[in-house]
Length: 115
Image (cartoon, rainbow, N blue to C red; front, side, top):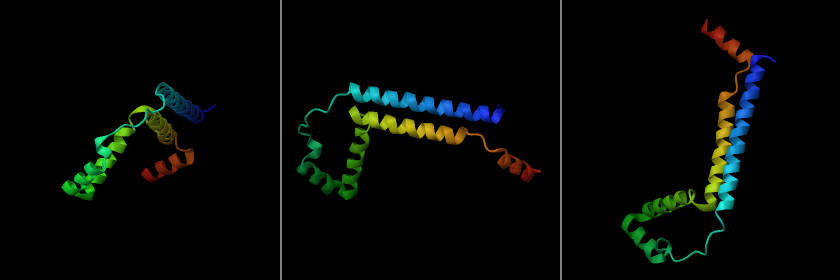
């Protein structure tokens, strides 16, 4: 087994480990956080509040507030589990893409161009 094959196998093992650990953490988060409670009254969702937000800051203020609430919601409860799962998949793909060694022909072409 040459060094390039060994490096590719190591990259695969590490990326699989990232994926397994991330998905296991996401599963634990999902099952620890039970189903969401019945929604109660929230001032931010009332029509009067939304109208006042639009009057004071315009549509941009309303959209920015809704975007902030959506982003804040990604880090709580069961949606956190999905966020962790997506981040772990992206991290494993990024590691595999960035750590995979180049083929010998690509390295040889680059060495000839530098000379």
